[in-house]
Image (cartoon, rainbow, N blue to C red):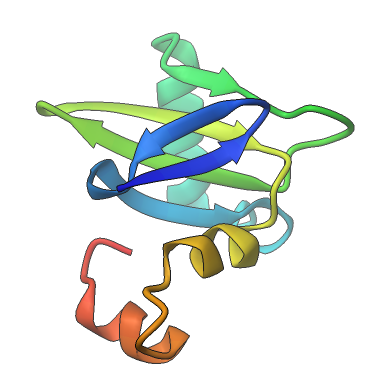
Length: 98
């Protein structure tokens, strides 16, 4: 399954390690360091359409980490990942990568 992350871009859902809300999550030192490191390595892709990014997606493909900045809210992205048959809380508990 692919997740549309805005700006005509999509990522494989299985490759998503983490989705962060930039308004609240970037106050943590670890999160800030991850973004700083990936940015310095040229592995952050900004796919925001209008305005500031609202979420950061950490991706791991074949052992390589990268990140996407999206104008979509983290909650919106999580809803798009949620299977129709279970609730959001169940999905988050059963899927350890998110």
